Amino acid sequence: MTRQNKWFHPFSSQLAIWNLQFEYKMSRIRLLSETVASQVAAGEVVERPASVVKELIENSIDAGARKIDILIRRGGISLVRVVDDGCGMDRDDALLSLERHATSKIRSAADLQAVATLGFRGEALPSIASVSRFRLTTREAGAVAGTEIVVNGGKIDIVRDGGEAPGTQVEVRSLFYNLPARRKFLRSENTESRNIEHQVHLQAIGHPQIGFSLLRDDRMLFQLPTAATLGDRIRDSYGIELLERLAEINGTPLRNIQIAGFIGQAGLSRQTRAQQLVFVNGRAVESGLLTAAIREGYHTALMKGQYPVTFLFLEIDPASVDVNVHPAKREVRFRDPTAVREAIVHSIQQTLERGRVEWQEKFRSPVIAPKAVPEKAAPDLSYELRYRSTGSSS
Ligand code: ADP
Ligand code: MG
Image 1: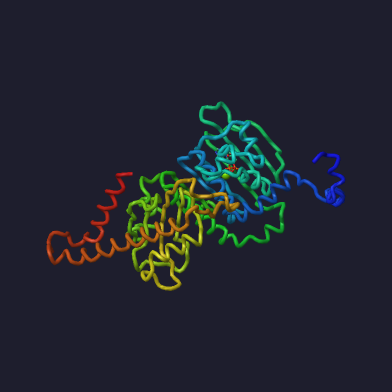
Image 2: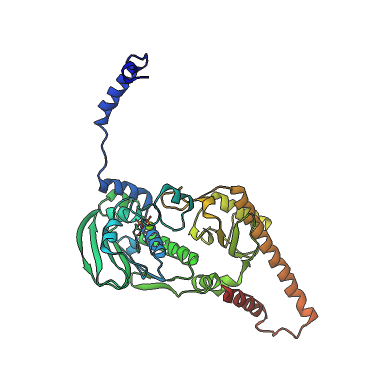
């Protein structure tokens, strides 16, 4: 059809009218300014101070940090500071990192098929900076000087040389100071602090090889040294008493899904899901599918209304997981949910069953060789040995 006779087509006059109406409406639609767009994005990414802590820690982990120190004041509402010893940024990158959709982690849509980092959306820093008084200091190892950038409510106020140690430090003050409506939705300082504490624990369990510390209003809540194994990290975070009531998963991969970690033995349960942690390729995720699979795995070993303690680590081909589902990256979508469910159920059942057999053997063994076991240390020793032997292998 030529351009000319298009206008004589029976539908084309209608088309022309639609075009007119569209043009008329266009004037009512405006492109948002960058700052407002960032504040809108912040609505999804930055729900509360704990989301700021999450995003900043994820950036530090992606930057290869070995140590991450977190300081919060007044539930993180007045201050969140995250200091890392990661790769740092030069001045150009530091400025670029504050632009929306600026990321070093993916380049093309194809990269979205297999995201290997915790971040990839390029939205956290500009979102946070648009709803706070924000300061970034960063320096690459070997650089003569670092960079300091101060942003207030999304507007860059200061860019200058900064002299901090190599790595990156982000300070977020007066969260939502320019969005009073959002500020009203914040809970008490205590609740926000507890959310942050949970978030830091979550990241610390997910990355035992990184040292973490959390300082709350000048009180050290915890200091977790670099740990050799997940078991060490669980012990340092929650105490040896909890670790002793867990069983280590060491099943074979089922349908290309490798599952590792620790789960509570039958009889250990909680009233909330706070200690039901699941990581998919290093990312802490929440999902109805995973929760249901865990429950199915425990089956009758769990009382109604109770939740098991789990530190489950799933390793799946990144191409089989879509992480681009939730703005805060809390949820993931599996290409083959049935396989994931089966793998979880299988590994939990296997681990619980092994625990049952070990338990039975422990009670049978004194009859066979009563003097072979030193009385006092008997229950702990077997565990310690098993634990150390797995510890040295990874
Ligand atoms: P994303 O993490 O999705 O890429 P962000 O807005 O969180 O988006 O960060 C933008 C970019 O800034 C990152 O891709 C990274 O290159 C850089 N960056 C952010 N935080 C740090 C950090 N702590 N250390 C080094 N680089 C960082
Ligand atoms: Mg990020």
